[in-house]
Amino acid sequence: MTLRPFDRAGQRGFTLMELVVTLALLGLVALLAAPLAELSFKRAQEQALRVALREIRGALDQYRAAAEQGLIERKVGDSGYPPELEILASGVRNQKSAGHEPIYFLRRIPRDPFASPQTAPAAGWGLRSYASPADSPAAGADVFDVYSQSSATGLDGRPYREW
Picture (cartoon, one colour):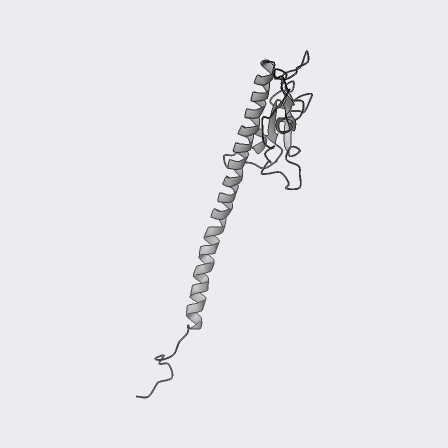
C-alpha cells in the first residue's frame, strides 16, 4: 500500500485550518464572557455597598437608642448620634455600668467598595449630620447618616450617593 501525499493515516496533529477555527471559537466565547464577568463584579460591589450601608446605619441607630436610654453620656442639645464614625468601632463608656465598660456598636468600620483602597475605611464615606437636609447632605457636629462618595451610577440607574 502506497501513501498518497494527502493521506493522513498514521499522522498526528491538527491542520492550520482546525487551529484557526478553534481559536476563533475561543475568542468568540471570551468576547461574550467578558461583559458578563464585568456585570457580576459590579453586582458584587453593589451588594457589598448595600451590606456596608445597612451595617453602619444599624449601628448609628443603636448608638442613638443607647444615648436615649442614658447608657452614653449626652450633653444638652446633642442629637444623640455619634460625633464621629470611628466611635462606633472604638467604643464609648457605659454610664450605667459600675466599671464603665465600653460599648461597641461595630467590630470595624466597613469599607466603601467604590472608594480607593488606600483610603481609610471611615474616610471613604460621606457623612451627613442630623442638622443637614436629605437632598444636600453635609458633615457637621454628629454623624446621622453615611453615603458613598462615588460619582458612579448603579445598575438600577440611581447614583451610589443616593443609596
